[in-house]
Length: 151
Image (cartoon, rainbow, N blue to C red; front, side, top):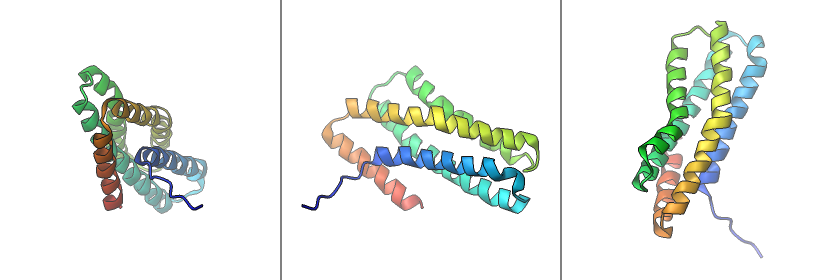
């Protein structure tokens, strides 16, 4: 019998973060062999992907806040996103061939691979624990639409 698997938007979000981490791994491994045009193209794609993840997380923050989470808890979940935004803003001012730029790429990878991924899982759990089934369907629909329409 042929069955259709339900699309899990939260699993998709985790996969998206993992894909950005994988792209960073690839860039970091070959950075020394790349010329500045290749570096620029790769970094631009990574920045765009990180910005998409941050935009999705903003939706999750809104949903978590609607569910009565304490401001301190939401702030703790939001801290890695703030660090990523600040990192991107400072990297925009750096030269691609500066050692600090490579170091910041590695830092970005670490934040995404640990904190951002963990926070996405925590958001999913908190929202799932506190939302009704109807609310979950609305949240998943909203996130799915944003995912489809942004690319």
